Every structure is written in C-alpha cells, then in structure tokens.
Length: 514
Image (tube, rainbow, N blue to C red; front, side, top):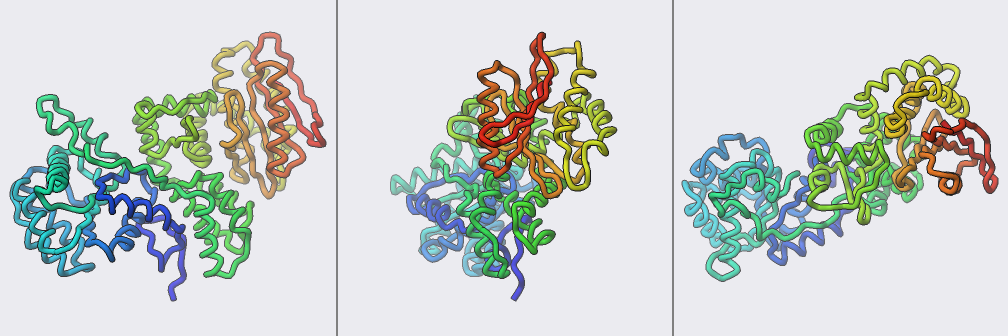
C-alpha cells in the first residue's frame, strides 16, 4: 500500500494523504444544502477550499446528484460573450463529470447548445427534470476571470431561477455552492454600473457562510493520531497540535507544511524542537503563499497601513467589516474577539523580516550587529545579556540626538534588525501573539536547542514597568523558563540607561533600558 504523506499541493485525498478530520464542518455545510441555501465559500488561497468541496461532494452523493466543476483554466474567451458562455458552461460541467458519472455527463452534453441565458435557463430546468433527482451545483475557482459582466449575468440567472422555484414557477438546483478567494459582493462592486441596476446585486439570495474553515488544535490532533497509527511513532499529539496551532492559528496550508517538513526532515522524533526547526526552514522558503501575502499588502494601501500600525507601532484595532473585510478575505487578518490581528505568528515573522529589509535603517543596523556576531553567540547558545548591552550601546551612540519620534515608532524593527544577523540562520525568532498588547511585544528566540524570551516594551512610567515585569514572569512560567529578558525603550529627555538582573518569585529577569 502506498505510504501516506502530508500534502501541501492541491486536493487532499484520504487514502493518499494525512488529513484533519473535518466531519463537523462538513456536517454544518450539509445542513445549509438541505435548507436549499445558495452560498459562496470565499476563503484565502491554500485554505482547503478544493479539499472541502471534494469531501462535501462525497458526503452529499448518496442523497443528491452533485455536479462539480472549476473555472480555473477556462480562459478569457469563455467569458467573452453571452453566446460563448451559455454554449459552453454545461459542456464544461459535463467534461468534469465524464470520468465520474458518464450518464450525467452525457445528459449535460445533450443540453449544452444554448445561445442565450433564456435558453440556458430552460436547459438547466430540462436537465434537472430528466435526472429525476435533486441536483447540487459546486463550482470552484469562481474568481478566475469571473470579474466579467457575463459571469454576473449567470449569477443573476441562478438567482432568478431560485426565486421562481421558491414560488413553484420553475425547477432549479437544490443548492449552488461557489468557491473562491473573493466573494461575489466584491466582484460586483468592481463592475457596478449605475445605468444598469440589474447588475448591482446578482447574488443577493446568498446565505451567509460563517463556518470556521481554519483548524483548531483538537482537529489538528486528529491528523497526528492518524499519522501515529500509520507510522508507529509515539509523541504527545495534543501538545504538538497545540504548538502547531500557536504558530499557524489553524491556517491549513501552514499546518500541513510544518507537519510535512517535520516528517520528511525531522521525522524520527516529534518534539517542540523539531517543530521549531520546521518553522525556521519554512520562513526561509519562497512560497506562493508568502508572495501572495506580501503582494496583497503592497497592492492595498488600507491593509498595508493596518499591518504596519499593528506590527511596527503596536496599535490595537477594533474589527470593522467595511474597513478590514479585504484583509480578512486575503487571510492576512483574522478576528480575535472584537479585535483584528495579523492571522498567525508565521505571517507576522515573515512580514517583520520583509519590513526590516525595506527600511533604509536596516542596513546600518545589520553592519554593526554582524561585526559583533562572534562575540555575541557560539554554535550552542546566544549570549543574550551581551547582545542587549551591545544594543543599548549601539542605540545611545548611533541615535543620540536623532529624531526621537522616528526611533520610538521604529523601535521594534530596529531591535529585530539588530538581532537577525546574529542569529545568522542558526536560529529564528517569532512573536507570541497571545501576549501582545499595546506598548508590549514578546519575542521568542529559538537558537540551537535553547529558547529565550525577550519582552520589548515602551517606557510608560514605573507603574507600567512593574506590570511588564510581572507579565514577563507569568509568560516565563508558561514557557517553563527561569530566565527572561526585558528590553525597555525610554524616549524621555531625562532618560538614564541602565541594565540590571532582577529576581521576581525566583525568576531572573535581565532588564535593559535604552
């Protein structure tokens, strides 16, 4: 029997790939189909949409005739005119079914001669009557060339048939499910024509799809249990699943990519350390997912501004659908309660690295810290106390008398830029999102087999400093560490640089004020 693998390319198939058990999610979608809902599964790229549709089709096939296809690769000519679209859409559906259900495929071919939307509507009705079954239509990749008037007319046709069927004046699909990155509301806004009101809301019958498609830690554990049964390896699936969730916030591609990297490169033992090493390797990769994240940040001013305010300036944002919808759609943001946050720790770390590389100041910082590399690290450990003292010296020497407001706003990036060449591929850092709040940032550094915690904090008075020390101590408890590091940026005119070891409840904290 073919050995299963973790899959990060295209469709996941149960007998070939290790898969998260998404039974509960599929059950919720089936309830929408049973209600006769029409809806769009719009989720970011590589978020498991195609696999979800495949699993859904299998689950529905006993009760419904499921016709599925994809608009990927159909070409611009398909959407060029009403005649082109109407004459080909049922044929494309038939082509998709020919190796699955030959009888249904031939029936779709039979009705694929329409030249107008009126004829296409009639063909759909006659096709469904002849099947003698309730038919569910699934179309993947609907935003491939779908920002066209013809596609919106097709949605309008489906809407009109739906409304007529409710009034017992037509027969149409039991449910229509479209999948893509964009939702149809976004597409129609781009094409809005005030002189043609009928195009303004072609999909206003769509039910809201609010099923969480990300994986929680319990769901991730189901895949790891399956892996254990197949391979005989033993490890704490619950603990590893929780660590995977902490890095990915359940982004399906990232979960699978870490697991694939551990299995293929660190597969003898599944430990925290092997997960850390896999994350480090993934952050060095050039992937289409990371390219999409950066492209969508650079191409959307509103998204870029919010990302920089969160990551560079430490600001918090209340979620607002009209402001943050596009960032959610592209998977850059997610909702955390009533706040909007960067989706996951891996994205944050990658974006930090990108932002550091874009800043002119990064090269100056890089040269200085790289010259100290041998003094500040060995192959086995970071000399973090010396690193912070050197950084303190660097800040006072290089930026004394400079633009204080600029340095305050860039403080996080300056330190991360200083740290990066010292790690020099032997280690990496990530941000712990659960602990972030305004004026505070916890950075976890993994180097060789050791873990270090550095809290970055903007000075805001002694009361807040005490609170910061206590928060760091609590986080050290969670991480099982006895030593931690607190880097305080003080931009007051009468600031005094200092560096001291403190002890709080038998935890040692090295506090440096710059």
